[in-house]
Length: 236
Image (cartoon, rainbow, N blue to C red; front, side, top):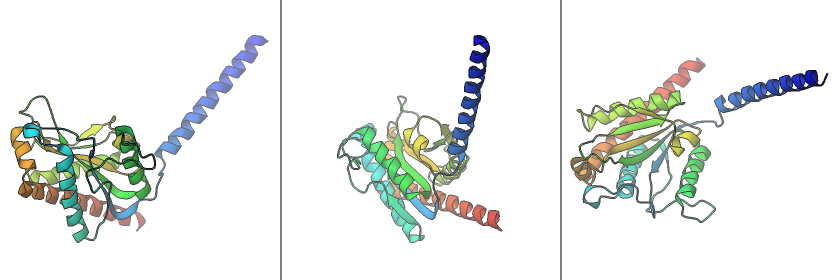
């Protein structure tokens, strides 16, 4: 009798776990936010006490990220796109905590993106690698986000206008905090490798920054228009 009771309890526990798992899947896969059309969050990576990568010639990533983000902001506003910047100065984001730590900074970036619920979030960064030969822009997206993948591929294609010989492809990632925690399509644009002498030199040049910014703007506009067209066709 005791074994029968234990068996029944075990069956009930398994059933409860299955039900919980289904509910969790429903929650995770269901939309958590109402997306705001024609709205973009631009996230200039790093800042303040977090310099990011320091490349050839002591080039500092945080400075280039902000310069490019500001240029993209201006271009998008000319196209009547609403733009929210996670930072507009050389500072870490501390939110309500007042603590300038990397963990707090990242959580605040995620909070801003989820609160604003943009049609797209673009985080601008610069890459680095131990082999100085490695170069070229690359776009990352969350591996479980079809929308992010689509956006990343469009952006990767747009960046070819800066370097037509770039053979890098949009790449999935399931570890980057920003990609995992944001509830809207989010991509990370690595504009080049600061560990590569040519990339580092180019990314410090304003004319080259303008080209990169124009390419990013072009990619964003294409992603937004593609999303708007898809939404209209889905409601017709």
